[in-house]
Image (cartoon, rainbow, N blue to C red; front, side):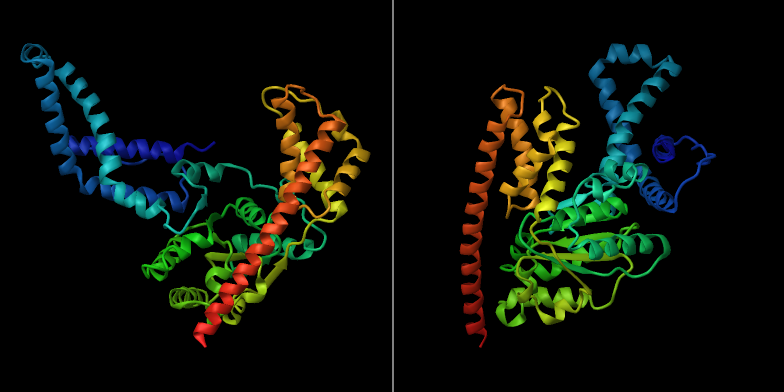
Length: 417
């Protein structure tokens, strides 16, 4: 593990403290190796801290004086002659105050600018400052350990994996992609795993986060902020837009605010980027505007898993959920029988990968909740019936939503005409 970054920040804090107390600062030199990104961040942080040293000195003096008053005049007179002790007390108070005041208040704007995120982002990875620092120490994520890539899309997805890796290593321009298909088939999961496997920043932007700004006319401004933020990342950024048809549908079907958002998106994506890769997910690829489609040379259909894919997914999720159990152990020998796996996979026909993961997780949770602590054939039958009922309910809901969407689109088309 490389502690140089954290050690350098501690050294900077010491430098700011001594500057604030009008003592000669120690030279900022040490025999360590820092990456260019670390040097850039540290230099900006040092500049902010040094520039505000006088203000910090005033705050430290005020707080120290107040502290002496609180402990009492007699006690203050007793410790003042002992200058060595006074200096130790002052240094302790100075360290605490400076760390809180300088690093929090004086560097707040810099940290927001460097590590903050636009309001359109629902989820970000890594999403904390510590996560950003430690992500460089972790091994890249192996996508195949977390999802089963169907043979139908293996060629396209493996190409995306390979080219993204090559661009990260050798330079070049990212190819944007549209992922379409039923919910729960791995579109979002693949994009997130791709970013983790290539150590890129990842931002998830749901349609609702964009449409909420249609009414006040700020969708364009927020999209511009999003692209500016993504361009500032050193390792490249994957922007994942979910339900992209909300603002990327055919222009004739969109109201004025959504049309402006579409125009802003087209303006930002007219030229391929070496910093931003865009992946859009939609269940209605036929509705996407032609100009927007031209920005996506890769279009991949995620289908519901076939029998073999369902078997592979069951084996993978059983390994991940039961193979590394925490706390109370649940016996799952029956799930290690290939015949049982085939039976379950056959019964779950038409279910998505997400449903299969939920199925395996529910088996364990029910065994724990009922305190049986063993997966039995009867438990498998009960949970399978529940999953099938959920699948039928979701299919019915999707048909209703599709009908409503088509009706709204037709209404906008008629109004535009």
